[in-house]
Image (cartoon, rainbow, N blue to C red):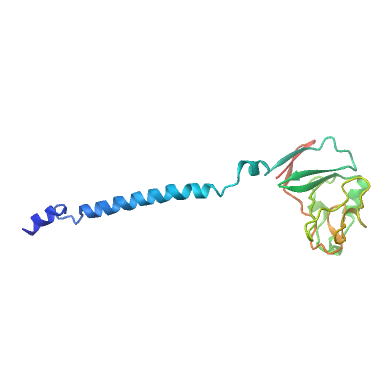
Length: 185
């Protein structure tokens, strides 16, 4: 008689599984699927927008930049200084011993090709944009860049030489695509 009562309540012939177990499992699975369907759009909304991804890298034609000339491009909303250095600028930068620098770094560690210097043009003290890119601008005591806000002086390799800035100008990730083109980012 006990067996017929169990069968009446949905228990299969002695296996211990009931309709209630099946419904609980099914409801739990549907709840999990619903939670995933709710959470996925929320997580996807945290991904960068297409316009932001487009700024992730910038290609620059450097073929028209003459020796001794600098250009400024924008990458990720920041100015990037690209300088076609002269032989004298390269010689001066290579002649500085890293031991005498506040943020020791050799020139060869900051460039991929000695004649091309690529720097994020943001002072490492308080985020100002240093002078020295345009013809006639003050280049500071070391011929590179000068931040007039607080007096930081950078050399021809973008290394801090004097002033309150704690670090050298940042060198972004970049690659030469050809002799006349480079990609920043």
